[in-house]
Image (tube, rainbow over the protein chains, first blue to last red):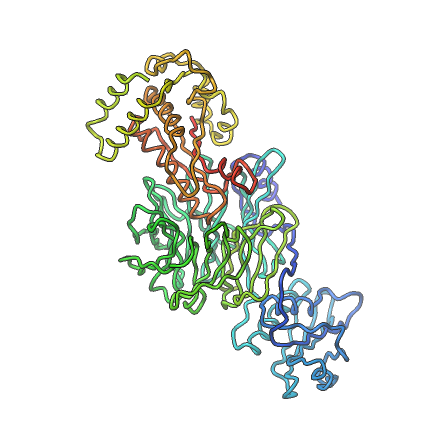
Length: 440
Length: 200
């Protein structure tokens, strides 16, 4: 408590940064802006509640929202259901064949103690009339959402063959402009659906951008400023303790951190004497090595999943485009040929696709595109004019990005096939710079 | 401005000018000669930009520097030719912000005139430190814009150095698109946000 009070006091002085792990902030709400019911038809029955009063969480709602957001499932409306089973003995498969459900999700939440719940769920194959998977969890109220995400992950895996990524975390930055014109920046960590937001950093008038998760999910690297007279630098913050440090005392400014897949290196942008190039920094030693040497702007590095090469943004051809370079440097090869500008690319887990910000020109503005280096094709996923900062989910099935809605910055999620798009709307202020953790 | 005093600056600096710097200086001189009424009145350089100064100069040392500008300093007046005909609104020293085209760090003639005036003032006041704060509009990615703001600040810095401001006295900083002065989402707002603020 004393730490909190001291932190609040510090926050009143402008230009300070403070680290407050575990402090809750306004929750996000999710709004479906576009959806096609073309995926696998799934009937998710509301979980039966066995306990007093109201159930602490609506498990079915969390699971259905997860599955829908992925774009791969058509969640059938519960009003069409002919029965509401919660265990196998109650299931009449023909009820579900009639409404053309291929998979059926049933479950129940049973109160076992003051803060102890048993959650059971089963995923059933309607046409083969058999159980695909059944799980039982014992947990407390605070963990019920996480259990629901784990159930979603299991369903996703059983039906698609791809590991789910619902039980994961995201980081993002919020900005609130106060009446006195001060800008308050907060670095937040939340569940992948935007729930359970926790503030891990607050600064006043010192921008925060480009959060990047370490592969083990324990650290966030991000860009901020130590005071109004110092240029940008890259910080490393331990998520659980809140301790943070500047990664290196580099001459000039550092930004755009990107972790190597083994977590031992950070690629970053270093700007010295007005020229911006890509460097790699060994996290343990702080030693840096220069990768690019070009008078153009080289920035936004991202590692391939195999760690052997990186992509980055460069305007060496006149406008920003995506280039590829070996992890030890060498000649950079231009990847993107279509579009007036392409920037901030990052790989999916297979290394075969890149998500990036693309501008086709003619006043089209900036959208999120998925680029296939092998064929040179770009699929446009969004239709905003200032969409930016795309980040793949750890399984590559979804992309989180920043967009504008009614003049305010919000986060949105789009399935990587572009079929389903949702906005994660915060109660107030600007929300931006999402980063999806590789692990929970 | 008087050609003589400018030539003096070149003489002093020539010994360590690179060829690139030399051409920069040469172009600046050419521009200076071409512009009529480009003489700078030194009067209250900071008066117009009280707000700008308080935004960036929040540390004690810079505050001290900023208040130093507000007081009259006669030594500077000896270096910069004073043209009594030039009205206050044309005073390039009264302008602390220069603007840029989209995704560009090229300086307009007007920007050159402003930068040149500040460079002359600062080179005549060797004790003073200046912060060149580069900014971008919201279009394009945030990290790219951080680099673009750096490039813009550096474009101003190069002219400062070419005109004799000590490199140690210049600090460049970029905020990219993170600190817009206008929150609108059209060209009129964007054009105000693509800027370098000259703060001292």
